Length: 219
Image 1 (cartoon, rainbow, N blue to C red):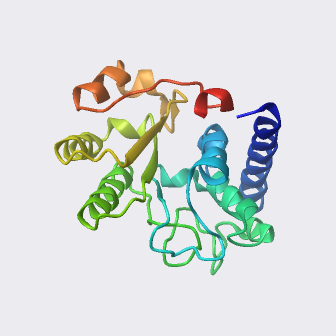
Image 2 (cartoon, rainbow, N blue to C red):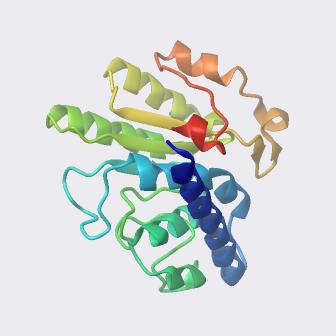
């Protein structure tokens, strides 16, 4: 990417963070921290990497995205609004009764959401299913999923990793937002997960460690 592309992505990521704060402010609840830490990843995926169309959110050959750490949806919602899936004003109704945007992603009620998530550890399993479906149907779309580092303490994450390796799901991209924090404290204090890269490698994954806020490295 050239410098102008990176600057544009940085601006969009900043707006996604603003949207996350806007939503949680009006909701008077939510999870801004994990949202802010993943905003750059969401921005890159939706504005640079993934094949999606806001005018046709259900197109069959679109790339799929699963936010496995579903509670961090405020920044994802902001990114989807910036992309044109729905109006920016919807962010001010976050978590309100009857509103489109609830506290966890809802695939039945929100354009651009491919999987309802919330129970930690389960999103990556759904992503594995989507990736396998693409293989079985001879489709070229890819599936992306974002997990939290606290989330990978869940055993189901490693069952999914084993499943992905066994089924050779090279069309699946798993991104761990390793910000070091979870609801009960630091990840290290609650249940240390290091060496995280070696753990995924032992399950057959090709692992790349990057600064998730540096678009030069993300790209």
